[in-house]
Length: 186
Image (cartoon, rainbow, N blue to C red; front, side, top):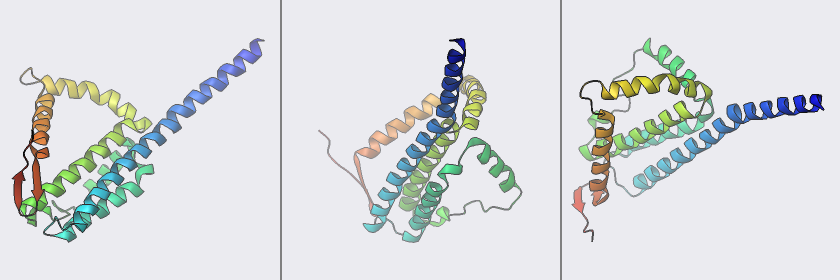
């Protein structure tokens, strides 16, 4: 009887290990891809509807999103750190997509899209791989200490509050390539 219990515990431990190291990261990868697919589709719709002055820059951002979708399986905190170490030794331009040369409307729209890509990348990196979980365990106390360091008030929460306020204002605005108009709410 004890040998069956031992075998059962070993099988349960292996199943738990498999779930944690394979199933959870696969679900995080699917969620990451789905998030980027929605972003890419929205950007494609905006390109098709002529919302950008410079469509080529928007197409470059769309290509970047496509590449991020293709490489989703290889994305982990460890791979990202190794990539950063390799890329530091090469000369990268400050603005590889050329966003600084665009109109203010195009800059704002494309930078927002790139921020969404970066948020998805960070989420997948920290919460979608075993190396990311280990990095999160190490970085969480550092982030909490840094947030309260100077003023005793969490700056991260203030930035989040400002972003929510900006999003609420932006949601009441009808954007177009020729300026902003506000819709009446109420």
